[in-house]
Length: 305
Image (cartoon, rainbow, N blue to C red; front, top):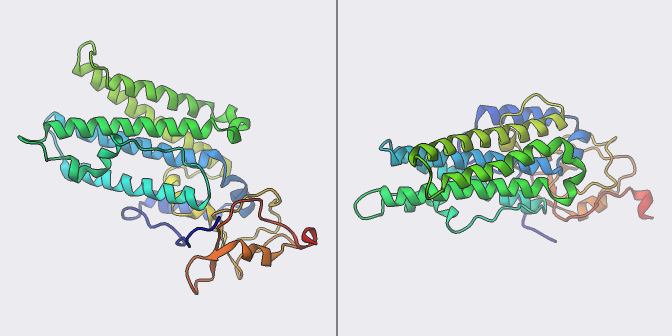
């Protein structure tokens, strides 16, 4: 399957976060063979999606404060715009690597990603749009949490169930917490809803932390904060100056891997012409290539004859 050439790295949605810069540096210092073995593990996508859960909850919390009279509309718009852009980046990330993103944002949840249109357009003020935007943010958080469950519960990850059990449980319980936020007849009304929202926010942060730490542990790095952003920027797939001489690539799916003729060292006997046939240039004259076809694409020259 051919796809359009992709940039060397997806541009960040906002100014670079020092944590993601540090995480990207840590990723690039990881042994290339280790990175290659981890890059398609389900926890990579789970770490990205769980970071989005927290951000959707941050939007819900900010909108909820606005419903109580402390409205920070520029903040809400910025959070919503950045999250919308990064969801698009995640879709492109999955497309290039031919992964299933497990995310289908419903029409209602998508409202929060268009905050400029959603807020301030109801006759008489903000109240109705704020309620809609709050519900949309909570819906989006729930859909993203369900996506984390789907990623970690896929057949590919069944053999990793033990060490990811906590993440799966957190994602499932978070869905229940968010359901209580929407309870139409809560005892003590606002207080219960506030408690449920605060608990869901704490649970979403715990989910994000567990997924990020699990990914960091597999890569044997201490830097867990900022990993999701670094992954979206392509740091985990950058092998343009890497020694893969001793990497086990016979069963590796290289879709999305960036490499170069001058800087990437492959195992002895690798049929580089076959690799070129399965790759496209990122940009004309850049010298960087990206694998654009799915499959077990590495084959030494002696096996091809």
